[in-house]
Image (tube, rainbow, N blue to C red):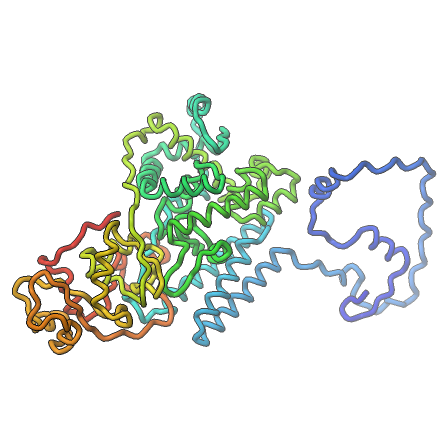
Length: 559
């Protein structure tokens, strides 16, 4: 054996002690007990006289008299799993910074994603878990700062606004238990049908108490109202994968049914996928769009993920816990304790505090939603179900151009397409538009050459307008307007749709990310006017101003 580059010959008793003791193992004593429970009992050893004590060896005469390093000191402990994960995360982050400084945002983002992934999938003890969470906060804050201040910072018009998950931070809190609730809830459960097992425990009662307060009740009501937009689609998808329909409330816990919700750990969408987990389940992330924010695609991915977790754990509570902290975290907790039971893991404090509260919170919302009259929720009117047509784009096509063609606002199109993080839908992107308008869009876009759909606009002619006035209003020229609308010999008639040639803008290197005004601790340093969803027209300022003309028809934005 080699210690500190010195060859040490072990005496027989020392060698025997090391062989019997073994190296430090990552398996705890509880896991050894758990694993050995599956082995057949060892045969009884025959009685024998106790072994005689070993004869003491004489001390070596000067062999190690001047050796400052003892054998035990040389056996330095190996780094823990947590130490290894922290170093690995730092390594990926440094690589990402190197790519970032070299002007390679694609590889930079990939390395940043790996850094966060290493931490989020780390199976750590409760004490080490705090170290992991602190490091995760530090890295996500640093990466976020690069996103908002460096990556794509020269493209403010492509800024997007994220929403803060309404329940973010609640899972780290503890709420009192109202003793009077227990008999009431117990009676409700007796008459509540549910595909998901509903167990009454004190942590569940504490969240029922929280959601009965003014603040908690408002958050719960708002989520149930927004759920109407996606409930039919979500329940159908969950049923297809064999998932209890009550797990729709997992999405309410994660995002409050805000498709552009973004947590401080950079998880986004209705189901709050981390970047690496989203890619694992087929959610593409490009400089044009992030499918983690596509409600339909993200719901299919979440249902498959929950199906896989249940197949692995065989228990819905453990599957839900693993959805929050990762399957590796739950596996490690089960391995350490020998208990494959969520409530026991919670009692033994081997799960992160957020995860320990995650399952009870979802159960509390489920119980209350299934008994609306008992909790003052029977007056909640769900939002109408989202309806739309889909149209694949031929060539890169700007949202302002589509809005011109349909006579709607850019904000309405953004609401239907929350996964788009640019104002331009790339070639082949399947765009959602208001229902029944596919033919209208095809007819209008036919007036604009495919290669110009990222920059050109369409204009609905108003009474008294001429090519000259339109050119002045849009920043184009009469000659360019006449060349683009060869079917119109003289000035266009009122109501006609004319193509407006505009110069193309350079493509940004990366997308720009911005936090919602609700992210008060992580708001970018630029102006706070990003609290509203911006129109992303990339045209002459005069034409952009004309979009707000009182004479211009606009549609009500659905929320």
